Amino acid sequence: MTPQNRVSLDPANWDDFSTSAHQMLDDMIENMRTVRDRPIWQKMPDDIRAEFTAPLPENGADLSAVYEEFTEHILPYPMGTTHPRFWAWVIGSGLPVSVLAELLAATQNPNLGGGDHVANEVEKQVINWSKQMFGFPEGASGLLVSGGSMANFVALAVARHNKAPYDVREEGVQGQAVKMTFYASVEAHSSVPKALQLLGIGKAGLRLIPTNDQFEIDVAALEAQIIADKTAGYLPVCIIGGLGTVNTGAVDDLGALLKIAGKYDMWFHIDGAFGAMSVLAPQFEHLRDIVSQADSLAFDFHKWMYIPYEAGCTLIRDREQHSTTFSEHPAYLAHQPRGVGAGTDWFSDYGLQLSRGFKALKIWFAIKVHGLGDFRQSIQQNMDHATYLAQKVTAHPDLELAAPAPMNIVCFRFVAPGLSGTEQDDLNREILFRIQEAGIAVPSYTTLNGRFAIRVAHTNHRSTYEDFDLLLESVTDFAKVILAEKVAG
Ligand SMILES: *Cc1c(COP(=O)(O)O)cnc(C)c1O
Image (cartoon, rainbow, N blue to C red; front, side):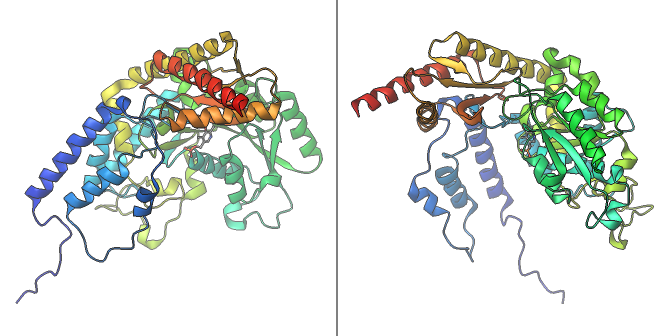
């Protein structure tokens, strides 16, 4: 007699599963539709937080009971990224069509490490579209990754592998006589030093070049440092240009960096985590020509193309240089002539990950449904909003810009006469906390020239001009309340 299975993890009753699933879908659509009507963020009560310390369950519960827990304990306390007044760090606002694509992708559950199946073709198409967006040549390669941090890591690994004067994969960097050096501005994102630490270059091998008053890399200082390093016996291998720095959205003089990289036979990488998308909009279209000449480009779909997390991308100008950095073919991953193990181009040969999810589908859906045209318009609209906000700040007697706002980031502060620098910082930090805690808006913060600033980084396709009016009204209203409290003591 054939033995019977002890267990199946599929639903015992598919009809019940379907009923629950439809309920969830309807609820989530309603959630997206009504996001503006809810507070953007609220602090989780302690008893809710405590729910997440319950021990590991041995026995399962009904799907409907678990969903109820979700609606009570999880759904009401989001980060707020899908709300029209979320402008913190640089975080995209999500796209409804991609929510659906996530369901479809998880249903197929492919692994895009390799093999011969359609999901790989979808990712290849998304990579090819990315090459077209940024003018990269047909022979370029690319990889979808978790985000800009991993995109920078992959690109810098390719730079290191191809510029090292020895076989770095074989020999490593330990004990080598020649020390490679990398160059970026002091405004470079923290993922750059992180990547170089992991690549054995260390912070010691990263030269952080000062910036001018626009927060752009000082090109003369960069070249002087390269020359000094060569004289001192270092090997300068890579310049990292910022296209949209994280603090202020500054754009380094990419044309000048490209020239210097060419002159000293160095790799030219662009960190365009969010800012690369600006070249899709009329205002920054002129940069596309320079971007197209970089050796590598890191950018995020989950920032300024609004795709739900996670979705970053690396483009590498030379496919061969890319694959020779990462490919490994043990017997269990050998590419076969036929069957599911066929295919010459496996994504696992282009990065660190072997197992890879189908994040390509949510990007593919979004680009197909919206066309690039919708994105161009929305990105330009975001920049128009930022210009509007910066102008209102400048015109307001109690507000000041903390930095130029060339792209989609506006840093500003409330200025109260008679307060010291530290008191100003405390006031603005308190204003920010109150706006967030009141559930009105979520800007973030940074420090510029030693002073605290409220920072609006705008990659939100749901915001309107009125949302920015409300932000500034709230800033000035809370400032008055806080100053009055101070006087009252
Ligand atoms: C956000 C950002 C990164 C890191 O990207 P993640 O997607 O958060 O990993 C790198 N560089 C810049 C300029 C960024 O703004």
